[in-house]
Image (cartoon, rainbow over all chains, first blue to last red; front, side, top):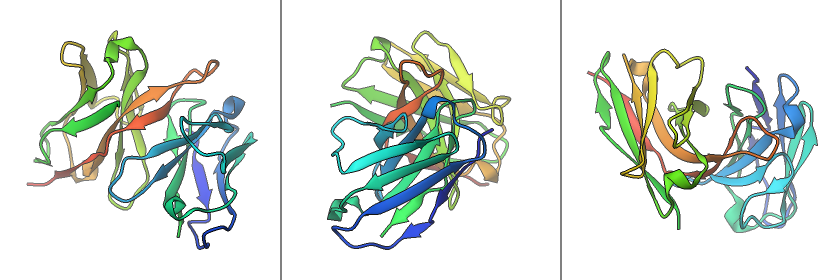
Length: 106
Length: 123
């Protein structure tokens, strides 16, 4: 199975700053089939990016995904107060579906 | 507005069966998409359990396949999870979700999630 490793574990930033989150796969993820999610305490996760670069419904364009092969990045261009949360990646290029351990943006 | 809601016992005894139901509102399961279950043990990462289509076709994680059954009840617009022979290691937040895939993908991402429910395995 593909193991996804996210870094850093915690990212300490201020509103208005740029956030760069990494997701590294143990083997190549087919055709960039990688998704990103946001989760806040007590809430259901929200889909941000599907397929490495496509945004989910209603997701603002300050969120962007990039990468291919084994290295993927989620970028938040300018952090808004509501963006402080946990972010995790997921690959859907092969079974079993697997998730990264998450990055907390505080 | 589409919503998913997990229900079922919050406490299960070791060796017994964990059963959860996901009720979908605002969207008919038979209209499309796939439907799945994910869990997260305390302090650990997310784990995919399995996926079902409204036709009844199922796809399971190899690590849980021998103990898992996912079924669908289209008349009630819900789908269910059964996990047999549970141990303390099965204690987790269990979430149901709607799954979709890109045009060329063979598998799915999760485009809508329930809030999840903590199930504890303990005597």
